[in-house]
Image (cartoon, rainbow over all chains, first blue to last red; front, side):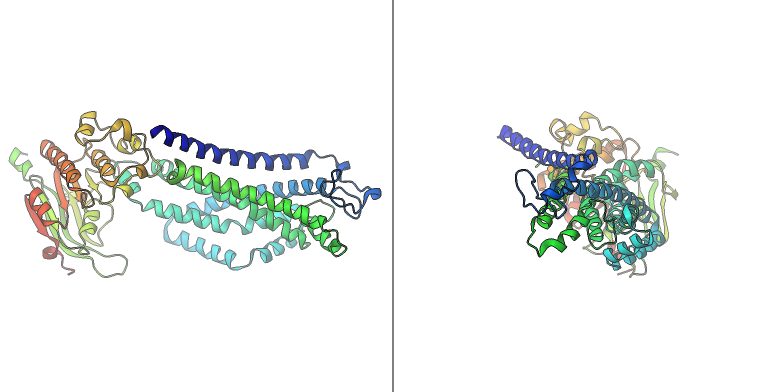
Length: 280
Length: 214
């Protein structure tokens, strides 16, 4: 009986680890492939334009004869790169502000909540477009736009977590057992906040990537010459009516897959880090 | 101090203690209570009369809105190991869910094998577990072991055995009473179980009689 249970634990855990590892590998592979890709791969070849998907051109070619598979990989890699950068930066802001709001009493959390309400009250996309336009569009505009708008919900999670922990019975007991505030912060608070933070950070990637793609799609993001996924999709819209479905469907599905992979990493990591499900 | 004077020494004392949350109604009003070293005081009263609130004040978890709580005539130390330790009704909340029990039980001091054995703590099996893997009774033993540090001088047991079965209850109380007698610790038992209080305590106070808020 005991052996059987042990076997079960191992299986579930290994399976979760395998899912996480596979997702990470695929995402890293796509990103790396995009970076080291030879520009020749997605250069125009006018002899081979408007080809549907085939063995030679996996995602088909567009009206300029560019290989859509190569363009999609390149575009995804740019999106992932900007998404990673922006989510990391915005998460650090969230952690910093959340911890301050949680620790420093009423006024700090009042100001914090006021800012969060403002940012959450305005639709992300509008704010993003405004910020991106103000900063002259391009990768910088998009990244800063995402950074400025995305810290709110994670910040609130961190704040709530710190507040709840501060009043929890085991922290109070620890204080009475003679532990200093700093010691408690490192040994009791951090181990609870960090997993939440990491999962929140990873679940932020798909948001950032989607927002980056959408404002690029709308024409407020990356410049048209860059093979970003938003650009590919908005160009494809113009040709959709001529029956070239693969221009939109294939890159769209690829984007979806990347987003789903990030979600998979996030939710499986949560299962591993949460003591209530860690040993299931 | 002579032995008998030490025996009769006032350990914890409430002086006109009142408490309320923010601007809410008074939960405790003008409470005066002295607890001496030689006695085991039982504080009884029905739910909602402020028993647990008073115990939190006495243990220094919260401060009274008015009045003072004195430990041997002085304020309770805010830093360092607190001589007044509380055992709480919900052991699962009093232990960090992300800590293995070995770490939790030795957070304040290293309990010796003998005490663990008397508390029926299976250190081999339980030490490497997380709190959510053990039952309330099992966890409560860890909480008891944790507060029985050498520097502890007073123990507040706030409904500590309410959710335990009769056998576990008896076991834990026997060990705790032994330790209290052996080390001459102060003990405050908070319960709404009158017969338990009568069994354990040398003096019983009904919170309804001393709480001016009701």
